[in-house]
Length: 303
Image 1 (cartoon, rainbow, N blue to C red):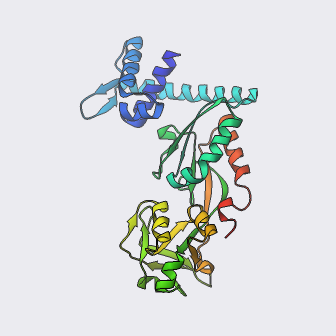
Image 2 (image 1 turned 180 degrees about the vertical axis):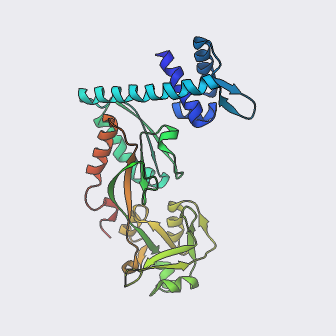
């Protein structure tokens, strides 16, 4: 299988553009990646890559070999997946990417149950708010919130994700509640820098149209849990996903503001690349998550 490892690394290096990026994708070191390429070149008796301190590119022979071997590896993987699917036993390494806060608060318990139910699957999960390229970075699937931006991926909607306006009772008692979003200009707003437009909060008007309200405040975090903690402590009003705010709302540490003007919920999606043969391990995970999130999400219950 060592020759197969060499070929996979060669394709990964050209796809990723560097030894370091290819090594990260395949779960190894840059040094090992370089050794595999050197072994492949020695076995073939040709130079496949032109290496300089600033750039890496294929030779003419390397480019031709890349185009052919990539096709063969894709066909090999498709055959492997079809055989594994026929065996009825999900197995192998499954690389998944998911948003940091959602992954830590909601996904981990589900993935642990999944790992218990499918002991032959090796889970490799990356929690990051960066939108990764599944194909280029070697991921099998992704969990994402919001409308999928990459139309080339297959998307399975799992459930709704609400974003809610919250504040502590002590803050509301001291500063007053809200009757309309336009009043936010007179309040301390806790800014979540992870939002695409963190200084403009959207609301739904009575006719269904959106209203964007500019906000400001002296506290800014790139983390929803931190924004909620500041709201619980009475520092102002936070705009956070309900999967973060749910436990605090149930416990009464914060209360919802302007719920009638809440925007339509975002979707939570499982995404995976298209292919003639969907690997059984990916199908098992997606079907499992669809079952887990069926109906009203647990974090929206009880408040």
